[in-house]
Length: 284
Image (tube, rainbow, N blue to C red):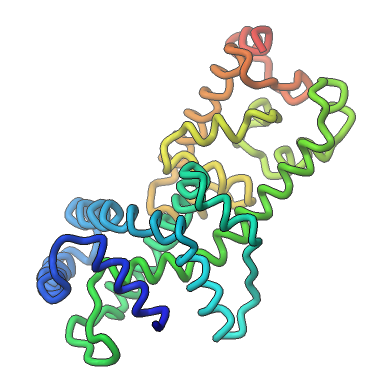
């Protein structure tokens, strides 16, 4: 079976209505959204509905390994370098948390390319006659997610490797961390939370990040990757103020975790000594 047919089959199995009816409904919806330039509250409602419909389908495809295998096949056909570690297939099969972690970024990246290509650029055609015929918007979006999987997986795997190396170097003591710049040098280089005193190192950092809303996770992960606030705002289709708000909330979550002794914030990383932060550092 062709990869495209596997995607369509997965979508058909995950949605209650039939393909033809779904395409007809999608065409009417696109006409309505086009009047607003594919922006505004109506488009946000549509986008949220698309996410909710696609999420369980993508999660199931990742658990079964179908998503990664299709991405590998497409990259090979186009001469794009891509490789997935065999152990990660086992990880996704057994860990819902690991699946959700990578799929959050996949959806956030696909939302931009989907809007640009399928809707604004007119790439989705309800009258398409090739292959299996026209696909629904959900099928188109799932395909975009698979295309984005290569970039997201590469960044995800690199981050996991970096954390594994850091954990191997860190014996849990403050002296080991302060003597080893590899443990928090990157956080300082990218200005992690936009204010120097908020740069943080902890083996529990990832756990705390995973507790945050999906948009906050996306903002923080892109900050780590070196993107500035304006770039992050454009990528996630949110305002610059919203990016800063998400960073501030996450910084507060880190200090709350410090008071609860879930995370350690080295004194040397605090360059501003507000009364609030002094009390939180004492708790940490």
